[in-house]
Amino acid sequence: MGPSISIIREESNRNRSARELTSLPDDMLTEVLSLVASSSLVDLFNLELSCRDLYLASQEKYILQKVSMEKFPAIPWKHMSDKAYKFLKRCRENGNPEALYRQGVVEYFSSMKIDSGFDCLKLAYNMRHLEASYVLGIILLCRDGDSFQKGLDILKSLYKSTNTIKLRECRRTVSTLIRTMWIRNYINPSYKADCTNKSWIPKTIGWPSDEEIDLCCENCKCYEEVVFFCKMLRGESTIWNYLFY
Image 1 (cartoon, rainbow, N blue to C red):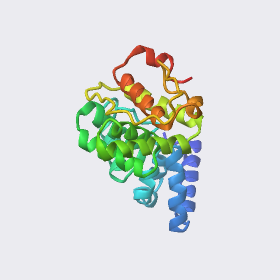
Image 2: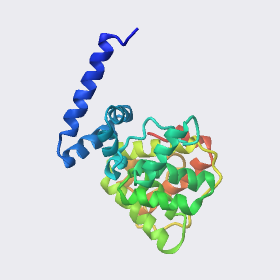
Image 3: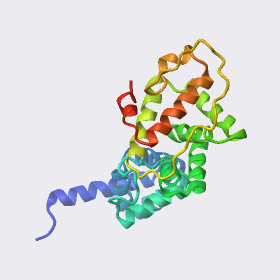
Image 4: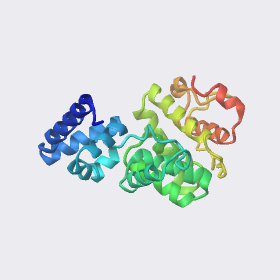
């Protein structure tokens, strides 16, 4: 028995759509494919299968940088086929910021590939990836000298440029990834920068309150952020109760 009429029509429509896309100017085609890649990995794969030209076009660096990581497991070696693993690796090699961020966190805190993990986070930070910037700032604040000041600058910049909702979501996303890993590399605050507001009374539990930024200095807020991140790494139960207020 041959294919049904509905299948034939579906295939015909897919081929027609592929022809229409490939007739677009190269820069417009790249932009369309990048939008598809950022919203639906399944749709991107379907386009690749529909036409050889679309497959080749979808391998461009710009498009691989935009691929959504939503369908990939947070830890890449879990429940992943060899084909998917190679695709994820290609995304990282082409500078996909989310893929670099995930790889950086896993390598730095779990796989003990500290230098390469740090490099991945730095690359994602340079591409303005929010969670990578947050984690990199925390890590640098657990180091000495110029690294400490750089971490301070990164977190202060995040506080100024990121609204409360996005910052809370950033913490949530980072903590969700952290909780899926076996933590082997624990970090601790290097030291505390001088407080510029002696009237501030620090809280004893929970993440530093977003509403308190006007009541304490930024140095203290950054320090408290690092303290509770480090406690989170150790899985201290009191942290989770106050994580997202």
